[in-house]
Image (cartoon, helix red, strand yellow):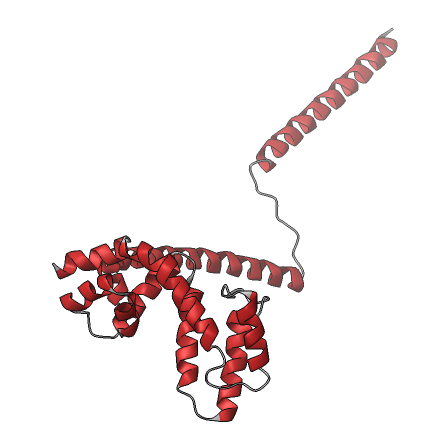
Length: 229
């Protein structure tokens, strides 16, 4: 009876010990898992190419951020300087400031405005605000061509003027009628300093009749009048 009762107790004790051991192991694993969840996992080492790409990406981000800051600073400085110079915007060129008489003369005659170097620059500033600056640029290019005497230079400058202001493919093409265009095409066979005379006169008339009246009512010219008074 004693030996028969002893075996079950021993077996039961072994099972209890095993269960206890298993429970302890599970507790340990649970604690390890909880502890490991707070430890950041280590990323696998990247290849040299990947590392270089990461460095380039980091560098690009840094550069962009720096450029953005620089642009912001420049934009701020530019706006400040713009606000300071806005009252004298047409006079930022190196020429001498116009006199009161000059400014008044510009309001009386378009010819006087165009003959005065400062007047042309003020008017050009106005044309730029109306997206028609090419009219003044073309007129000035024709004036420059008239002063040239070297035949090779005349031919080269005439070609440039044609490509910049006459060609229908140019973004700066001026508005000319078909008759004047035909005259120019004939003259371009043998260019002279007066190849664009008719076209220049037509653009001059266009600026006089169309742009000049608006210029007299513009804030640019009115600001000059206020400064002159």
